[in-house]
Length: 176
Length: 91
Image (cartoon, rainbow over all chains, first blue to last red; front, top):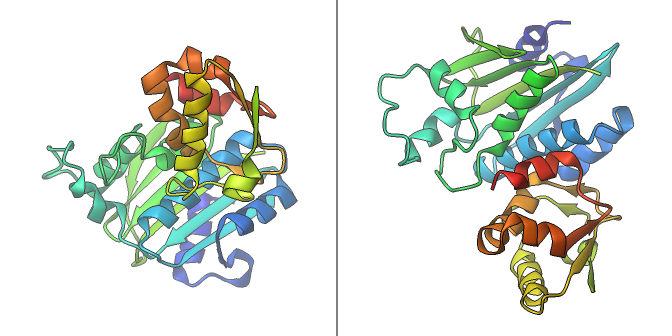
């Protein structure tokens, strides 16, 4: 199953099979350990995405989809807080964002330490997600209301948004 | 050697950087380091110990005391997996 199929289903209104569940740490823990108990690295990466959404989402609704189908692990996290493109200009260390496309900015936030706050040590969620996607042959989609970026293994390219979204959505597929 | 049960400080989910008990935990670690002692942080009952939490706890201590000092004086039980160490080595 293609990651874009899941992304589009989730954004378009989610048929039951791709239903997102409201999420916090307890939900993530229970769901993950039901299907993929021993992969510490992957679990920590997903935890960072959840914490990102909690910390940067301004109390927004956070929902996840987490499933293992055949040999693949699928994860979607969605929040309706301010998206990356709204927060990243607050980082005073990033002076050359003007004129950069939404996809280029999303590519930038996959680098280590690039955040909407500029605070040292932050920005681990998307960095680790991109890294695990690259090192384990995964597939990653990051989208906000302004644009979408896809990463397959260590290749990145821009995608067009087919549906309007609020907040941010991250989809990750990794072979189990 | 001092021992701390992390669950009594953070609850089952040691995840968030704004965890209210982090300063207290830092204080205890600093006290141990100042006395040239070691500390064992029990995390067996913890369901999630996030990279962010470990970063928030150990980043300032590594900056102050060095990675080698922290890794020899501050121990987690069970030990931290490689993914944590990979991050901490870079600080």
